[in-house]
Length: 155
Image 1: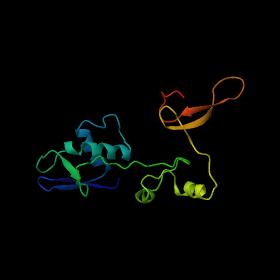
Image 2: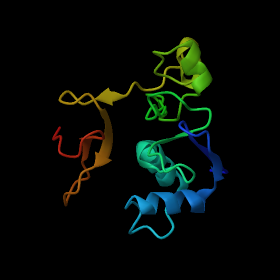
Image 3: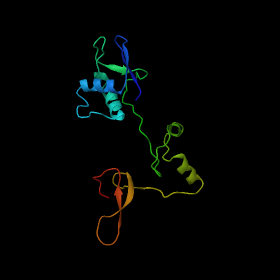
Image 4: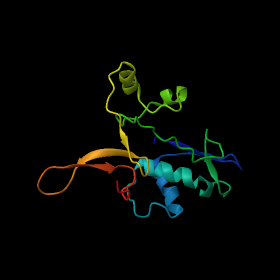
């Protein structure tokens, strides 16, 4: 996070804040008390969730916004969509063109050419991916399917 421009909609005040300034502002709200050096991702997430509680330094108006992001829905974080075959992120450009795609370019290309990789298994209870692991029993080595989505889901 290089710098974020915080703005006040009431008086037009603006300031560019770096990582340490954003941490200071979030600490005034009672956040990040136990994190002396929080990661940038955490600071960015807390900032987007708490912009409406930050106070303008000029007019003391409560509620700031990030310049260039005046939308009402500040929590619109784009989640990475991963390929169902190789578990690698699908590029956002591909998702713009094909919004319902479930495979990356490489895996889809292999499937189109007939070099199909093993299709993934899905949990019949929760629908998450299932992976094959070595069972932790003594004696003969056994393999068991484990649900990767929900740890409490017993397959």
